Image 1 (spheres, helix red, strand yellow):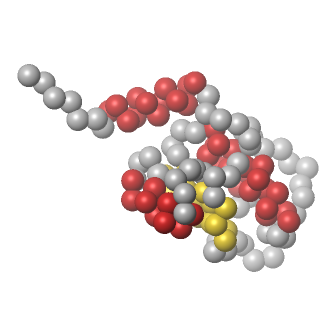
Image 2 (cartoon, rainbow, N blue to C red):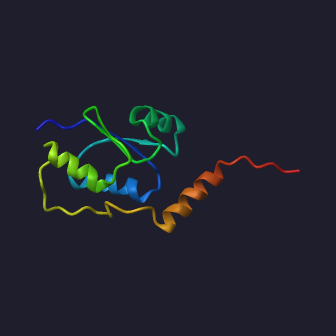
Image 3 (cartoon, rainbow, N blue to C red):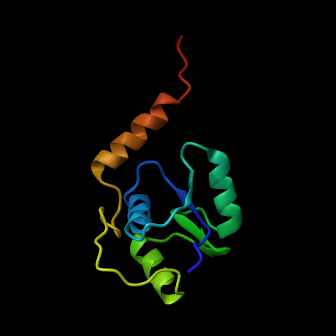
Length: 119
């Protein structure tokens, strides 16, 4: 089976994004990660390709899966014979929102790059 070409538009700290990563690790799949938080150009690219602003978005062999969970990515790959069923378990939740800790980390990262005006 030929390795799929996968591009994943993910957030640095995000439960949904980590669920997508966990599915790729579970199946041993290499993928190109484009962090839409660290690089706003990747967010623009994702929106142009997917037609919407929500993440994660995953492109597999030219097919865009917009606003998708790890469970949904896995189901699509199984249905399209990209991967085979496995008894391996994912190493992170594959269908959940960000935790409070992930939200705090994201807020801290964004605050570090903020412009502050002092008088």
